[in-house]
Amino acid sequence: MATNTRYLGLIDRYRSRLPVKDGCRIISLCEGDTPLIQLHNIPRNRGLDVEIYVKFDGLNPTGSFKDRGMTMAVTQAVSDGSQAVICASTGNTSAAAAAYAARAGIRAFVLIPEGKIAYGKLAQAMMLNATVLQIRGNFDDGMSLVKEVASETPVTIVNSINPYRLQGQKTAAFEIVDALGDAPDYHCLPVGNAGNISAYWMGYSEYFDDSTASHRPVMAGYQAAGAAPFIAGHPIDNPDTVATAIRIGNPQSWDKAKAAEKESGGWFDAISDEEILATQRMLAGEEGIFAEPASATSVAGAIRDIKSGRIPSGSRIVCTLTGNGLKDPDIAIEQCGKPQIVDATLGAVESAIASAF
Ligand SMILES: *Cc1c(COP(=O)(O)O)cnc(C)c1O
Image 1 (cartoon, rainbow, N blue to C red):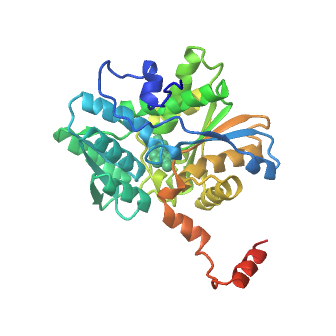
Image 2 (cartoon, rainbow, N blue to C red):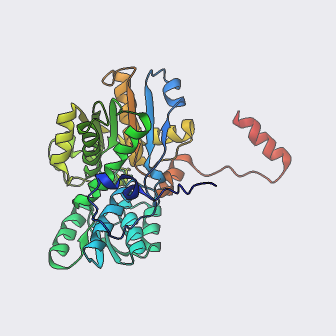
Image 3 (cartoon, protein in one colour):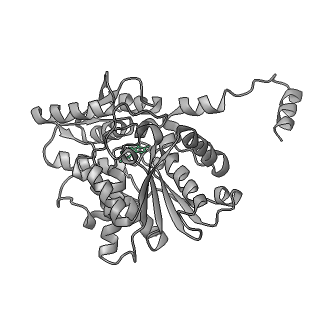
């Protein structure tokens, strides 16, 4: 007889390490357990002597790592008797909030910035039956509004200022250590609101504290150059970048992320939009991995820092790919152009193929 080993999501897998009350109803879509893929072609093609992996969190149920936090936040909200959740979002948080609220049978309200949201994410929030309010303002404006609304109305905030979000997200670090047998030397992440880098640091620290891991990685956080408050050293107005998921000027987890940088001996750095998009194409074209622009920021930063020697050769590196490339089809098509049109004849197809070599 075969045994039933069906994976039931990250709360089931890491329950002893998560603040989940006994007997409460778990709201899960079997999130987590995402692939840790070793990059082969990218380092070989550039002569980089490193062992580098991507944690492809774009393969979560709604296509981003936000599902890790949302299973915890919505499970807690339901356990507390909440009938509705609310968030401000550059897109992926709204998709995850909508999905987990639907699963729980409660309402989701999402505030998204006007005109700056990837189409796939908007489609998800709408289809998953959230009430979507597009505000005439940016993410930071939405975040302030959400805090005000929640102080006056019985709705649960499920942005990463909700501590259960980071608890869920720390499980990605557990999965990496469980897969590799120890922590990597370096961990590279895109940074927007800075919740995820804080969550990884928490996860690595917990495994280190009970000796499940022998050390903690150096944490490297990369921001888009036009939305880089950590590099400026203070929050900025009017952040702008093609990587809409990290178009944030006033990170909510500032202090936690700064602590992770300091305690790990890590750094923050800025990546231009051109570099972000070139790396997105590199991951797709050379490794077959289609991640959204914000995600490519981690790999762009890692490659730059390996080349400069800041990350020494021989290192073992993990980069988080936070979201799925399908989230933002417009950016992909814009970069790659339209398919070529040929006559429906053998000759036309054969000559098109020959000219591709
Ligand atoms: C939310 C998000 C980020 C940024 O994560 P923070 O925790 O806000 O720093 C990066 N990439 C993608 C795809 C995201 O959805």
